[in-house]
Length: 77
Image (cartoon, rainbow, N blue to C red; front, side, top):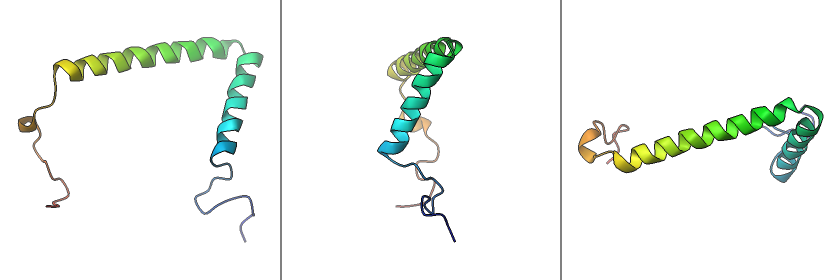
């Protein structure tokens, strides 16, 4: 018999409750462990740089239809 606070998908915190718990954990880590602030800022900076590079690459080097070999990989028509 499964506990009443779990679902068949395996998670017991879903939706808004899970989001609130995640935000609280991040805030507590920022307050309690200052090194996490540096790690978070560095992660955001690296993520923004990678996003900008990918955006610019795809803007100036778009994928052409001729470049795509298998247009229907599942064979659906």
